[in-house]
Image (cartoon, rainbow, N blue to C red):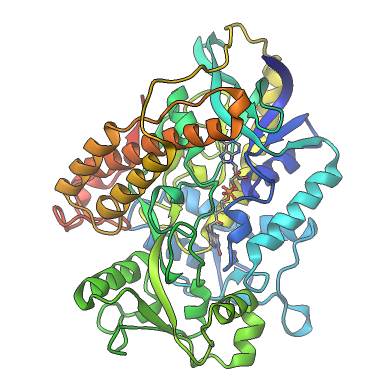
Length: 526
Ligand SMILES: Cc1cc2nc3c(=O)[nH]c(=O)nc-3n(C[C@H](O)[C@H](O)[C@H](O)COP(=O)(O)OP(=O)(O)OC[C@H]3O[C@@H](n4cnc5c(N)ncnc54)[C@H](O)[C@@H]3O)c2cc1C
């Protein structure tokens, strides 16, 4: 077993991990591990942009109000106020680090509009906002000189030390890392560990998320004893390009913000009479309306009519979508875009306080893996990149304070590398089974019977064991499959606890909102 020590271990190289690492780099030694290439992240695929109050006709109370409305009663108001208030400063910081957001006349920031926002407040870099943010943050981290970034290093599990500190509680003191290229285990001991591992879209048959989104941080945090919250609230994006599959191309909501309209198979306007905001209704409403329409018509997809957007404007505002559609044979804006819903964003996660602290001392969580209280039962579009930078800032500040009072850690327990595990199903079979059950029973529309069936099936699944470092790639995939089983079952258990319909959680068994009993977070801990 190789051993190394650092002040702070950050897991994940998306916007949350990179921002946290950057902010700590002047004050501590930071080791950042990421399981594939450093650009492989949900961040790199974000299209629409970052929400922040930048326009004269906008205000913090308006942003707060829009976020609370989307969250269907479960957002924590004071956290949302903090998010909206700190947002503009954090966005200006991104600009200082080199992020080039799109600008219009006179160099003024061009602000987009998305569903649920009462004002134009989405800063974007054409329709490749995430790629631009990732580029700039990676460059800034490289320039900082004090962050060691290790690609292809997979966080297998967290290390905890019992009876530490004055309260004698267990504390997170590092992680067991699989170094894939060198096929070896590394025991990393750190004074603070920050999980920034993103979401879990890969648990679903159709998703906009890339391969990395297997819920790892939720799984290893929960296994180590940290509480998770609100996992039942999985957001489905209504407009993934059809056919979608396991890595669907997203047609950003900003396209509907520019006037595009959803149409049924017979050409009628799908959202007329469903919601006053029409095609720009909240995502859960639009996604369920599409699902219902697909069930009614038997059609494989609905259509996004973009013909009202002049071609020049389309090409300039959405160059990536324009090229991707055309290379797939869809002559936008003349031809409509075939779309279906796909799993997109995990609103719940490891339960954190205002400063990113989980319930396990020494362990922080930032970005999509965290449940800060911002999103409640439904995330407002483009609030997630904002949440990541605001809470990375707050967590980094808290880590700095904690470091001064936390002695360097010596591992006391003996760590042995995981050996081969008992027989189970092959990884591909496990992943396919998880996706099928999550899509069919734990998706846009749920029921008591469906959730029970999914739980029984997930609880009975085990993965064929490969845990020898010399087969590192296979070992990582097997462990990811284990994570997917665990996170799937946590989502099901959370959904089973909420006997009502609210925001992203809709069940035919309990179709109404019950604020008397369920106006609270769903918290699970081992
Ligand atoms: C197609 C698409 C479009 C989107 N558009 C927008 C948008 O316009 N606006 C918006 O606000 N949000 C958008 N989102 C959501 C947003 O991109 C994500 O919520 C956000 O980028 C998450 O950032 P993160 O840093 O928390 O995680 P990620 O960016 O997903 O990064 C996670 C990192 O953790 C690493 N990792 C995971 N597990 C392990 C492990 N076990 N060991 C080591 N490393 C690990 C991954 O490799 C990766 O580097 C979009 C998402 C998608 C998929």
